[in-house]
Length: 145
Image: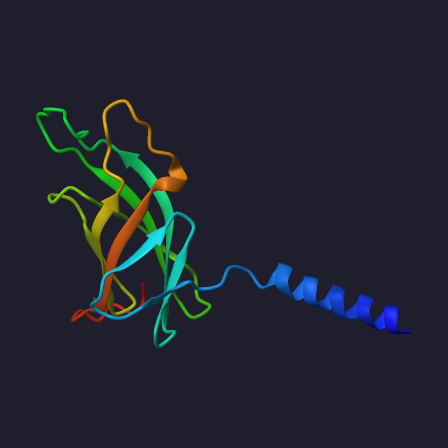
């Protein structure tokens, strides 16, 4: 009888752990920088929004030690989600002449930095990238996105 009870408890515990999904590791404090690795997500302290980093879709930044005609650009794919609603996927850029911020769900999400920076002769593995972002309330009322 004890063995059966222990087996049931172990099965329920394993099922709960395997279906719970990823836990939020990074709390977001509005206006303060926070960092995400590829595949990670964060949640605002008030639990209103979640932000995730899917990865880098392009990286043409001029490598350290090189002389380039232009600085290049890298594109980070991020998403925002309010509650259980759909994820709004966006691309943020490192180049100052491209979109470094997005307004969504009455907030502004801004790309502060993307690392690591390219080095000549060294490939950056997808999993090595991380972003530094800030989230703040937006003056514009666009809660539909």
